[in-house]
Length: 386
Image 1: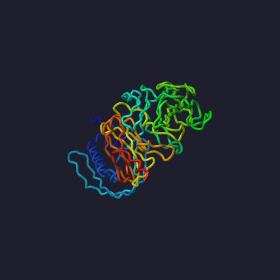
Image 2 (image 1 turned 45 degrees about the vertical axis):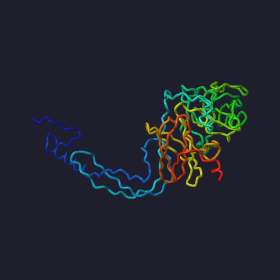
Image 3 (image 1 turned 90 degrees about the vertical axis):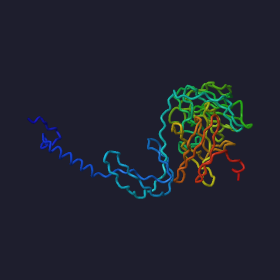
Image 4 (image 1 turned 60 degrees about the horizontal axis):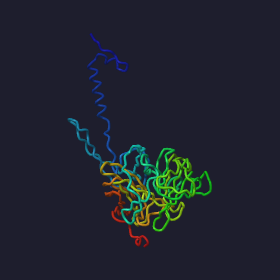
């Protein structure tokens, strides 16, 4: 007695017919064997390949590269057949790409060591005079996407660092000083509610550097808790994080100004705020082959200990200032001490360099375009003037 049944999509002539089932299986195997093999694309010579992830893509001009033969490796199964090595055609030159992964919001519980005590000056050239303007129990380190010197909002240069924080987070004085501005108008003057800084506070500090006064600016507040003329101590509350002014969301915009209290007298805060104990800072000059600074050139920093990435770009061309000693056009702070790899894409080539980040210190590099990386000290001022 035949107990087989006909499934909805099964041909009736195969119902209960085992011979027919065998024939159909053989037909499927023959069709599968006729499908073309999938061959991985050829890779460009001297180009580092980054796994594809969701995020912004940085493109740079590339030069044509030599053809590279890709080898097809079959699945390691019993009786597998190794196919001949195919020779792929010369690829059409594409822009060299660095894919910047979209950074996930760091957890509030992310552990970091306490800061070095301020003022922290491990060498005569350093000036880590300020504490963090956000308390240690919150995220208090700069966003990688909004570092000093970047271009945002229709090519406007970023003259500070942005610290992501929930609206209403207390904003603290980074050092002792006198309130010289409190309210709207840090950029345009007057009580202008359309000022790009929004509600802001400016402090003139009780100390300076190289006989010049120091100022810090705290922007985009939703509440100001101090008044002009008031003296504050390190850690006193100045206001609350908000989203006033020209912003895309709540955060604190933090600036350091040296000499004059204006938009054109800023310095990179990551060279002025004390790092966590046991962590260090990376600074350097990204130049072309003729020794001229290259603006907005991306740099990827990768820890050899855990493959974590940090991202930065060289400064834009206006409204930013290098440190008198370091003469840098890129800084990435808050790096745990250890060994890292630097990667730069330039004129269609990828350059790498291993570097040691030392605890509490600034580790320095120079990049000379096609000449690649060089580790060491900042250039002498005399050589820059020639």
